[in-house]
Each structure stands twice: as C-alpha cells, then as structure tokens.
Amino acid sequence: MIGQIFPLFREGHLLRTQMLEAFTDYSFRFGELLYTGYANGIISGCQLTTTEDTIIVHPGLVLFFGKVFYIKEPTPVNYAPTDELRILKLHYLGEEQTESMIRYEMELSLEEDSKQKEGQIEMCRFTLQQGAYLRCQYQSFEDWGTAYDTLNMVHVPYAALGHSTLHPELLRTFAKEMLTHTLENQMDISFCLDILSRGGAVCSEALTAYIGLHNGVGTVKENNQEIYNGLLDILREVRSGGNQKKVTSKKHRSILID
Image 1 (cartoon, helix red, strand yellow):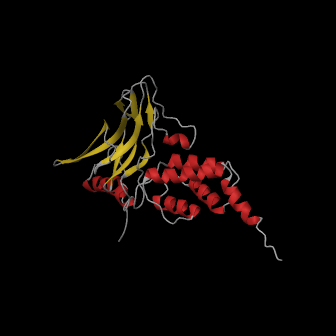
Image 2: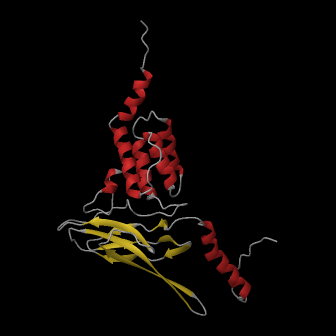
Image 3: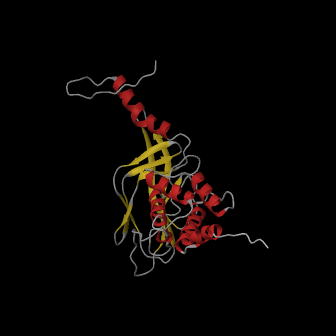
C-alpha cells in the first residue's frame, strides 16, 4: 500500500520513532525527488543586496548534486574596489556524519578565477572601480550584463532539467521589454507570455531553441553568456524595428507579369 504519514506534534503526546522517520522522509527526501534530473543551481530566493562594503546573500534554496540546501539566514561577504574581476562563489565542502546527524558544509568566498569548478555555484561577478558604488538594481535587460560597478548575474546558474539556466528575473525583464514593442512574429509573443506566466526558471533547451528558430540558424550553445547575447540581439532587432521590417517586406511582395 502506498501512503503518507504526517506527524502531529502536540503537547502531552509522546515523540515516537515513526513520527521522526515520517518527518525526515518529508523534509529531506521530498526535495530530492522533486528535483531529480536537475542541474546544480539556485532554486529560489538567494537575492543579493549591497551596502558600501558588503554583499548580502539572502535566504534561499540551492541544489547541489541532487540535494536541496536551505540558506536560512542573510550572509554578508565583504568586498572592496580592486578594478579587477571578482566572482562570488558558493562552495560545497562535503558532509560530516555522526551517530545522530549528517552535517553539510558550505561557504561563500570572493575569487579571481572565473571558472566554475565542481562543487561551486557562482552567485554574481563584478568589477568595482575606485570611488564607485556596487549597485544591485537594473534599469533594463541590457543593464543586467553591465561589467563595471554592478552585480552581473548573467553567469549565475539556476537549477533546471538537464542543464542550469538563466536568472528567472532576467528573463522576465527580457519578456517585458519585448512586449512593449509591436511584435509581428507570433513565436516572439508566445515565448514572452510563457516566460511571464511561469513562476520559476525556464530550461536552457527552450531558450536555445527559441533563439535558433528566431534567427533561422538551428540550435545554439547552452552557455549562459551566449544565451544572454542571443536574447539581447533579438531585443535590439525588435527595438530598432528590424523584426517588423522583415515581416512587412513579405507582406508587400508582388509578382510582375509581362
């Protein structure tokens, strides 16, 4: 028989082994099953804010090797202007097991190495110039890719089926900006509405397929930066009216008969 036990913790009741086992199954195993087949990355939360000398990573859920980890308290990381690239990374340090518990260790650190190694998740990158303030607010989709004095979130992996993907809010910004223009291509409209209707991440396969179909070049690589660049090119094309010009030229095509 398949069933589910939900323990009821009430005053005066004995705490039984069966109740603890049910609590463990629900709180830990449920997350592992829910994200089976997902690549490492942020699941939700982990918002970043800045002060004059710290980056604060707020509570959120992160997926590491099939396990869901909960960052339950805001965690500050100190920074200073260096005029050089810095990457904030979350490191998975492994597990420590005792007779009564398994403890998973993680830490945040700023590094110069832009490569993401096994057991690491990039949280942001930036190049802060002397006298500048590190900002975490974005004015547009293009602004998300700013290299200087801004938290660049393009490379941050979000957990998704198969491969990690882009920040959901970055994609929502793209969809909103696209829909401020008159879109003649129905695929563009459907894609943007689908992004806005989702509550989470969009898988990278869908993003690369959209870019390839829009440009008529087939599939493109599944690198976050390349996907972002592809979406930015599409937005610039639509912004300049190039998308409308392509469609209009087809509508006014005529055949001359001598």
